[in-house]
Length: 564
Image 1 (cartoon, rainbow, N blue to C red):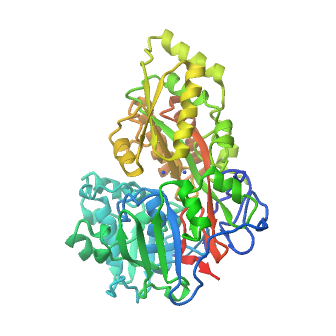
Image 2 (cartoon, one colour):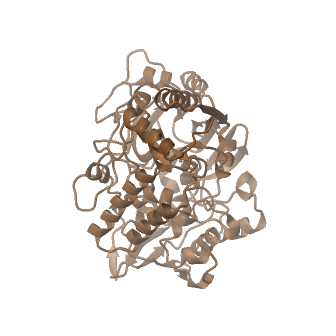
Image 3 (tube, rainbow, N blue to C red):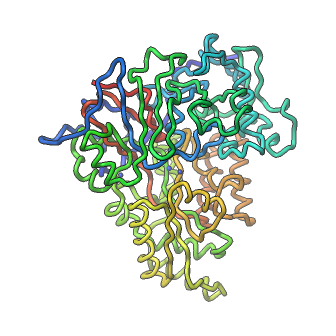
């Protein structure tokens, strides 16, 4: 067995998009920035503008409170079910897995496991847990809690949105499909503090995956006693930096410092108040009035006003915003290609998106490594979709000549945020002007939107994904048969799946990355989607905050916040 150090780093050569931007462009950056000192903005240092008034926060120490605004209540706060970025951002502060992201936003540091060993063949990981771990109710947490939690997640009745994250574990996918027994899944508790995990194939990024919400434990007796345990504060048992003090589904979450947290001495702020403010203009007003201390719900006005100041923090993010195309409704791949090629993404990114991100010319964003190159995957593979209105019109005309019948109207669904509605109107206009297509826009409140999406009640739908680890698979698996929402199920879709499965089992890295390249090119040839932009995260932070950090997956690590 080879001893592996815990001080691993996410090898993410993340690149910054220009400032003013479910989920990055050129220049690497540390994910953390001091709220009172330097702020990373496209590699530049900024300082507060004269006369700028920002929100206030209570000082650190006993009774300190930090108020953070998000756009809506989380879809779920059950880590074994959630596949939503907004949910996992909150979960990172309530739960802790075997590992976790450090306070710099990028290093991997011990969580529940003090250290681990890896077998010579790279297939078996043996984790050595601390012997004094506790749940927020003071009861003991052991290796068996991880086994139970992961097996629960794989069971069909759990209806987990993230169970495929566990498919790197031996027989996990087979068990989820009823093809083997629970005992055959490659996870077992040797004793209370020793967890043995066997993988399907050597997976170098497995330690990074252990920071995901999908790998966090939940308490068996609590979950079995009440299926709605995560919706009520009095039944919400966790093991992270904070426990859930109160839930008001119409207003906020109140998180209180967890005295049983393994690293409680490192937690500076006693209370985290997460408030829901749907309208970005209202969020800006609340920030300027001192009612909130930070928010990621930014309007174009907020970005414009605070760009060039220390209040606007920019963090690089591995993610892509895109639109799914329902392949059962828009059946010709040439038409689907045309929809993406007809969009002037740069114009939309520069003028309609507050953060002014980089237009996406591929699906895998900048920042995902290419195994043998100092360049990243996106740079090596190159652009796979560019703005080409003439080419788009030609493809549509070819499809029509071959018998494709353009519908009287195409339904585009988006959330009801002002930015999404504005972008939708721009898409509608571009498709009408370039392709002569009539598009109807339907908007839904955020929580309702994803229910409609899951029922495939759309022709085109807004979507986005932020990766979980430094490998192309973290993005490309979005369009596997088990995950994609585009109803893409034909022979080419199965060929795409086969390429991903081949890459997963491949130990030769050159061949493996050739498979990923071929898969992404096939994805664009069939176009069950089109990308819009690579993600970048910006957050307004009060000058009363001395330290605030995101990780490179766009989770707000509120547990590391420090107040002046």
